[in-house]
Image (cartoon, rainbow, N blue to C red; front, side):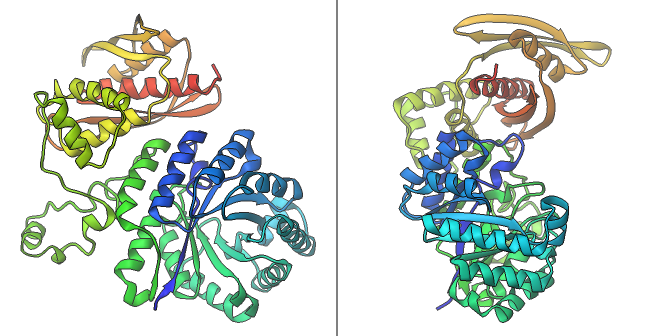
Length: 504
């Protein structure tokens, strides 16, 4: 029997620390329920002391999501631990996750304390958490840059204090696989008490090595891997759950290890996280990228037609990617649309279907064919919309290389049309200026991404924006065969998130 590797998903905590990716309570619950269907062993639902809203969100996940362990993060101080327990105490399987820096860099530069006092704080925190909860995880923050002897002392003391899981994180992505694997192996040899607990790793991707480091750690005895969907997370992100899981599955004879992940749910989970966090997945992303199972080279295509194993080491269907040939048009009726949606795995309420149908007709009137990818994009956009303070109605553009672009935009507010015009550096900038004039709110565009969802001259365009408004960043997404309209819809979506947040 191969070793079971526990999958600790921190998408809702570490992944949510990406600027503009903040999730509300409903969105966190939706992702958590999908993570449970995916089969993760642990869901780190948040950092409850960070805000009252996050506390409520973690409480909701703890109360409603069954199956996985529900963990909450806390600094190594009593007040944080009290809040963490308040957040997860109603979970079927609660865990308190406590962390404190162990490297001299963190101790001296951040915490401004010596090793001995920090060690005592770690022990006291574990003992305090243990009064609430049997399952206590302790993380030695910045372990990969810590003095090895001191790291061993901290780990041994925290196990003695009652920790059931010890996490050895590569917090800043400093490690390389050979070094990190050796660290895990040496810790197991030096600290015999690790045999009594679960040894976990948590790797960041600052050097692009998070997955490689995680796999090296597993190879050398780590039993739990902490990761996120699509590799989202602080700075360059975390180790990617889907890459680790499929590496272990594809190369099981090498690693002699497995997870209990339901791999056919991987792609759906990836899409959900991308949409709700408004973080696009790069096309060449392993496992879940749009091009992961696409073949353009004639040589590759010839090999694939003869035997898919010539150029595919993973079957698309194993991760939930399905190829559909049925294409809808504006002439397709409601029954055909409902049938196609069910084929794609969507069971919509009547109200949701009407929203999707209206958007479908809007796109189909301007696009000859609606592919499965088009329809998936339409559905996911409609199902993740926020309450619309302003609704897109129409736009007109005058532009050329010898004139300053001029845009006229009409938005609806409570059914009443509001129209204004503005110039800009380009047609998209002019449209954005119109939206700001109509709403009376100014934003600073921090990020703008435009791509084609499908192939062809009439491809559906998808725009994603990040807009800073009053010091906070809001993400928006929009689709249309017209890229300027897609951009307008994305910008309005970001502004509606601002208004829905109650900060206007």
